[in-house]
Length: 402
Image 1 (cartoon, rainbow, N blue to C red):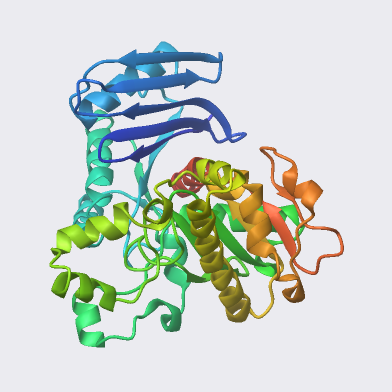
Image 2: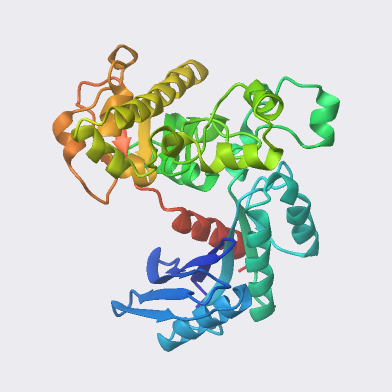
């Protein structure tokens, strides 16, 4: 029997999230998280889904190599070690693939070099992703390592959507264009939405709203992305937990010239001290909703600004797509905040979407419709599963050679 397991790794600057899946039935065998790597207070939390046992380890983990060795040891305790002949490949989330990587790719020296060349446009993510890949390659040099890129799904955008209106020579020299992010989630959710409607992805136009602490929207026509809200970096677009989203670029010049702020200070302001946090001091939608229920006007204004921007993108993507079959909410806020879903669609009934209050209030882990049967445009809640999507893409690629 051919190897059927895929280990999915998502390496951050100080963390590693992982899942081991059996692709014969897409079942999860183990999941875990290593966090605070490089600190004395490092922690690993590992769950063996084959037994239901959860184990936690606290103590210093020096670096990613030590982290992955610890993960391998935990998997081995459950009979799921990295030396298993049933392991077909390791799939890695890589945030930025530029225009070069349009699909999952088996990693070699040239791939590593290109991911490294993209560090200037993804300085927070690509270095950590590279560290995870190199560490995994050292542990299992004989095993296919597959990079799955957050930007790949958005490479189908037409140039009219991907280009910024600046001097093309400068844009090309410095790779300045709209790349988009959360692509693995948008790909998964758009297909899952089509399945929920009982239709083929190529027959469905979907607006996907990935609403977490980071947030993005995409317009998907027939399974292909034609526009998305994030741009050169994940800062553009929707109001997010700590990111501003869209703003007049001259704000940066104003803060530098009049406010005397450095580029690093402005970068920190827009990425870490803006969005919901900058508006009301909280970036957790649950806490903001609690404050609104208590009559907090600052929290209410932050919520209203968040919804206003979201509605603008929904309306824009109706115009981009021409015909919309469904709006799909996903990620932490999109899947759990009924008030956000209701407010985002309220007033758009003339365009076709509507939310049934009773259906919207129901919580669950399965994809579901929250629109009344009479709505011309379906509204859905579709829990995202980026790890499964990475595993599927990885296995589809390595399976070609088996």
